[in-house]
Length: 133
Length: 280
Image (spheres, rainbow over the protein chains, first blue to last red):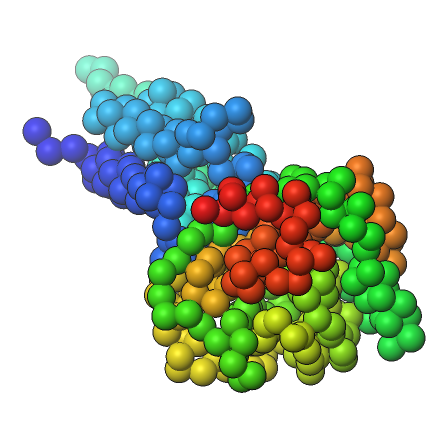
């Protein structure tokens, strides 16, 4: 049975998020610079080379957490919309706000790829809330 | 006959229409809340960003440059590699010589770049052990990049003379990212060969060693004056000395490899000899 339009969109957005997170994780482990400007206020290299780009005390990139979050999101959105989607999206949004705080306040630069992933989390939150109301 | 009266239609109770919240309100509130938080973060950042330090006068610059280019040998020996990361990698290419035919150290960077700002301190300290600079001026990295306003010097307009090596510096942009200098085709080729990502700073030691990036974090210099950093370099236990002098020692070891350990007064120290072995 086909998924309702909002659910289908949410699944697609989650898959796009998995794609971006896999790219950022691959870039981290390959030790290469992502396709992104590297000077001025937009500087993916500066963000991804910062201590905040890995989970504390490990070499696991934060983007690996993104893969897991978007994968769970994709699974959750195959079920009819409800509070589960709202709660999961809220968890993601809190994490995103923490990362945006690091980028803007602590580092003073923005990573375009990370921002794309953050925008997808916000879109999922909006869909979840809209579906509930 | 009683007229059968039609039963009056039962009066339906009036239902007050429910004034439900429009569906768009909650999602819009989420977006507005996020936008408000991001705006707050931007204001905090603007409030925390230090103003760019005014460049020093030429007299004061001379004092600071003299101070950092006449560090005692004991300072270099005490620090060793310090906290500097060894980013230097052996490379194999045609030995590179400069305009006077001596082995050349090639630096490619930019004035806006905070990593270049940090690395220049170590380059100046190290290169001054083999020759001397004139015309160095103070500047700071971009105000809108990571590690804003990192105090440093610029190689643009400076000259370097040495009886052992040639030094060629290319500052591609000023601190406002306007074009400044352009590497030659040969320099561009070397840069692309050993640093395909085109990162700056890029430093090549006669095509024997090369590295890109900074060997220590520019964060160590943030908010400090040139004079304060120069003073800290005299204390081998300071964080700045451990990073800058440590990095200078690594650079010195690479140059000593280029010059066949000349001059002996610099290259024969056990500190430099040990670092030369580390470089491979």
